[in-house]
Image (cartoon, helix red, strand yellow):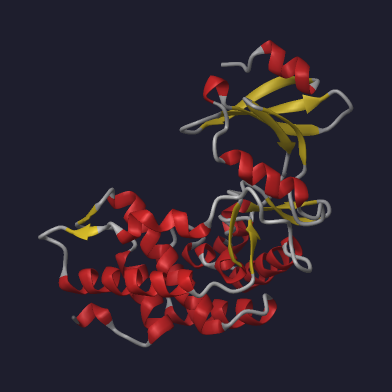
Length: 282
């Protein structure tokens, strides 16, 4: 599998090494004509769709905390090669608090001053349709029904009272931040406009696939303490956003009808920390 020759020529890159194929693109590590490596992401005739907003965000972000975008065309992107390791690797290796500190440093670096101009980015509230339309299946446990209902109400309240609205990375977490010679840098942005506090909401679910770590209330509290101070946001509101983002991810996977999900226990833990309610006993 190789990228089209015209794409290689347009970006002046060579020696493609296939990395992965996603639902909408194929990725190769390539060599740049001027030296150094890069990632070529080829979308084909369908184009990059909503990922264009993510590249726009990265292009406007400070270079000391975001991957460089070397080139764009409707069907492809050329992005800086980030050698790693990721903050997910660091957290899994036992340096969870260090990873958390680096993540909030990157988040703060992405949002200097008043941030980027918001025009043209999709709105955060438009991402929540799946949560608002999620219905419990008959087999859904009472506590899980109550947790989803609580998050539907909470999400509505948060979205209707957003503060410091600005363009966001939109998917900032441990796996999307890699080490580079100039420090840790974010990549794989979504590019949305919404409340600044939301930027770190998804990171409470990461590093993904490590339930013993992410479900620990002490760890959730540590992240809330560290990130609310380091990112200068309200601690409770940060936890509330974390809970509704977890619920949103569950809703996306559930496709309209909730029966069971591997993150329902994480949702219960986040809601408990955010609201003080133990819905597992409902």
